[in-house]
Length: 94
Image 1 (cartoon, rainbow, N blue to C red):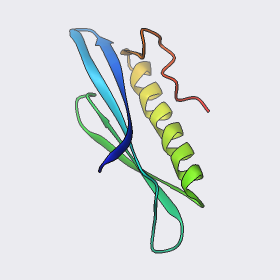
Image 2 (image 1 turned 45 degrees about the vertical axis):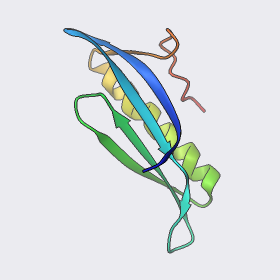
Image 3 (image 1 turned 60 degrees about the vertical axis):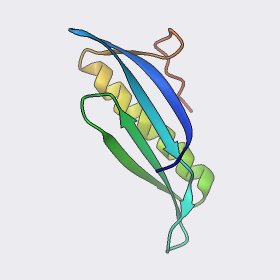
């Protein structure tokens, strides 16, 4: 996937620090006329890839951002702290 946007987060958890990258792909029209936006999250121990589908490119992108927020929220509920620009608000709210 060639990302159109990337966000770098700082990961703090028991045992150390690291970086998490959220990459968004350009929404593409599929064979059925709908759109899909690829999302990749790395740095959480394993690579996570998701495909968000929408009726147009904007909806697919919005859903990819909501997916990123949900995945990262789940990870923080397990005891990790994620920061963007030294803030815990990661900026994926819609």
